[in-house]
Length: 242
Ligand SMILES: [Zn+2]
View 1: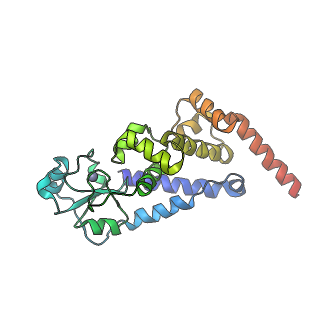
View 2: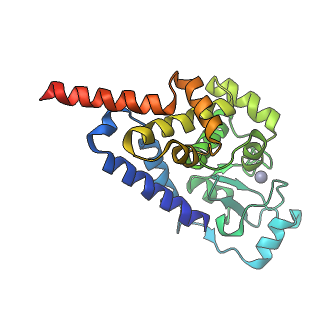
View 3: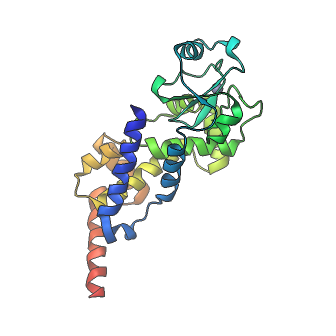
């Protein structure tokens, strides 16, 4: 189900870029990362060493059963992380799981080892972990995302996530989430005719007064004045070209 909504989301984004036409060039959001990830995710089906999720394996995952150690590894398609069956991390949704014979198979299908259960026996480098976190935010920014939820999803403690994120990215996870949301809101303000409240909802900020306050704090404009200014600039540019 989640996979389906993920692909719908990608399609939705692609439509946004194409219908925007020339306006898109005035406010560029880098879509290339997302496209790469899309093909990465698509490549994840039918890969070497992938096995089916039997009820037995599912129970082993739910019960963190250490007796299944080394018999299989499970990966979570929504986060890009793979784990040992015994991992104490929150169990994922059944439909998002891919099963692999070995850690190498999961690795070659572009999944990254969990920081908590270390399925390759090695520590996941900080920058790889943070890439995984930013990838997750880039795709799920419109959902509710607190630091605790994010830490839980990405298999680490919130304290550790906050500290490591700041070290690697030079900003906090919350800053990154806000920046991502505001960047997408800017694009929607220019490219669509959606109401301000609707744009807030589209980027995970359904509380409209909060959306307006945050937008102003980060850009210096209210969403409405930003839209007006950008559209005015585009019209001026068009007039100058004529
Ligand atoms: Zn794990």
